[in-house]
Length: 110
Length: 115
Image (cartoon, rainbow over all chains, first blue to last red; front, side):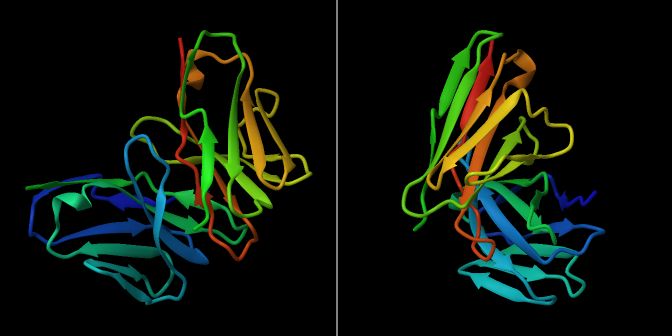
């Protein structure tokens, strides 16, 4: 069974600070995705990384895919209250199914 | 962009009743639709995958006779929770995609509460 472990599960930091969220697995994925989910809504895709070692930037968010395609990280620079939310990493397996991590609940204090 | 609409967004009903949830792709053809379940503070768990015109493929541990999935058109899939019980209370989310090379687009979910 493919599993994705996210850490930390919860993170509360002050506005302006930097943070990193990690997503780890013992399995190799064809690609890895990061989503953001608001309460009572479905997840919204932020980015997909495909190549080992790939780095993608989305404004203040930097996503990295591990060289072995088993892990990924999300780094947020100068966090803002609008970044508050649940961040989910998800691995896409060879069967094209998406395996979701449990998520990191991020709270940015103004 | 690709939009997936779920209806209803919230439903409360008595134990023993059946509940139907609709998932529609509004501006693209959903060749494949996925149904997920998310319990509080848990992640999304895939329940089943359905291709238009074919029977759904259920994940291990998901009862196909309890969770009936119909995907009769390229824009609509329905999930019917039959004889629902309190333990079926959860957040049900569908997603849809046009082809395997395209990302899944998620609906806003349906919160099901069984009394």
